[in-house]
Image 1 (tube, rainbow, N blue to C red):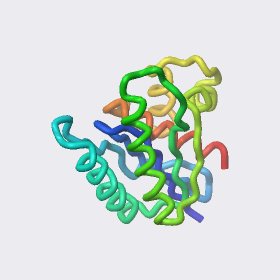
Image 2: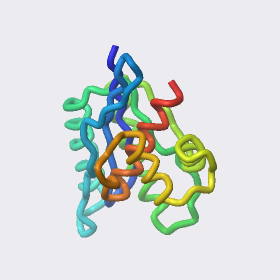
Image 3: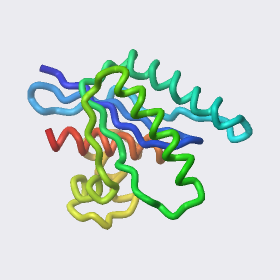
Image 4: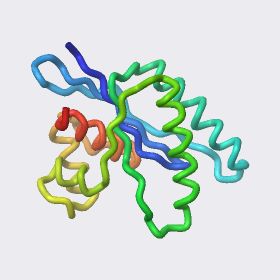
Length: 157
């Protein structure tokens, strides 16, 4: 049975997504990847509504069996609260769709894909490119991170 996995890299300005399938023979295929963007000048409520609506559309389109999302932890960055708000909207939408969820820290993703938890972004992107047989590195970074999350989930099943 084919399994569809959607990876989501939470963010308010840019939310990355990456959709893959795991075939019965365990081979992997990329369906699509990209970002949901919100305008910095808009009110926070409008930006969260954009994420809410666009994520519903993505879920209807890809119909994932499982969603992988980055586990939130305190980053000590000025946008921590904004990312947490966006992540809350994501979790709400996933609950509304009754989807199975797996959460991974960045270190878990790095460990799974590169063999060590201190890998840099380039190493992770190269691992994603290799495992998913992409012709080039996935871009933008948020979409690459989402593919890395989906790929990590595929190895954890």
